[in-house]
Image (tube, rainbow, N blue to C red; front, side):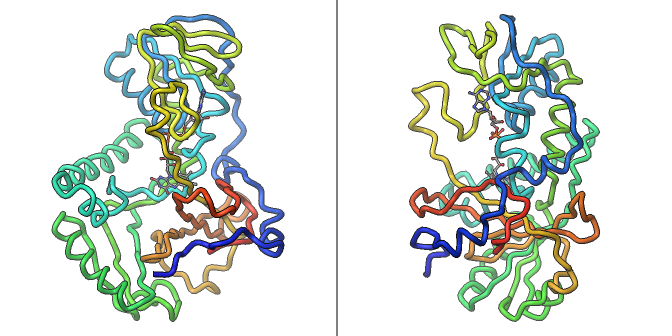
Length: 341
Ligand SMILES: Cc1cc2nc3c(=O)[nH]c(=O)nc-3n(C[C@H](O)[C@H](O)[C@H](O)COP(=O)(O)OP(=O)(O)OC[C@H]3O[C@@H](n4cnc5c(N)ncnc54)[C@H](O)[C@@H]3O)c2cc1C
């Protein structure tokens, strides 16, 4: 199978195509200005100190407070909450914890039933949290359309549809004409439309809403407070202060781990999100509102309205790679990228 990734470094023409792209979070750029929580500038005590203000850290802080409202929870974030992957991802929400049921079955055949159940519960719990915490993260249960471009991919889609039915997912197999009713492209010869367990979300609003909910719940948040070291049992040290905590939760994801012993367990996987300038949807022949992925191209697309131009959505494309050696740049989210899958 031909690799979807370029085998060589970008040429001057490639570089010129995205020279004016800016590596900022499109989603965070759409949020209104709001004051940051003050940096940590003193020594304080806490029951729990959380390092990292992404989805993991913010959600953990909320649950820690929910379980015991009297618990003193301090959250330290190096920059601003949501500035990591949480505020700059593609916003594709999936019930699968294994990047697809097929992939899960291949790697965890004995645990797939449990993984699928946990994934479904997690998906519904996320939606419930948004309701209960009054977070408007533009959650839309749009479903997900995977398209096939080659005959062998059609067989894969047939197999996958059967498998998804086995796990109770609402999935529909589309022929070429039915796919083209959603998106006009002669290249699409079949499709698998997943109606359940798949949604879109505004990642910036989600991170921002969690941050506000955590603050309301009494979590003490300090932004612009990078943790430099964790010492003894347990002092969490920043440039300006220190938290003496009974427990620490590291929620720093792919960032350099603060505990050397866990470094070998961290393998960053690179994802790219590119956002185009506004596009005329009818000219693009795109009528579907759900996210769309090509079976083997590892690219996921969605349309998103922009604050600048709500009626002329931009296309947001995400590609994933575990390769570190292609020499291609690694933007996280770009607002004005010309290059778009
Ligand atoms: C480009 C891209 C697209 C993605 N698309 C999707 C998608 O469509 N759907 C999906 O489900 N997942 C997607 N993901 C994955 C998803 O975004 C992440 O799994 C998730 O956001 C991780 O959240 P987190 O809180 O663990 O980490 P992060 O959001 O990265 O948060 C870690 C935080 O820790 C802070 N930090 C790091 N070091 C320190 C320190 N020393 N002191 C204090 N703070 C520190 C960072 O500043 C950061 O804010 C995507 C990821 C990327 C990068």
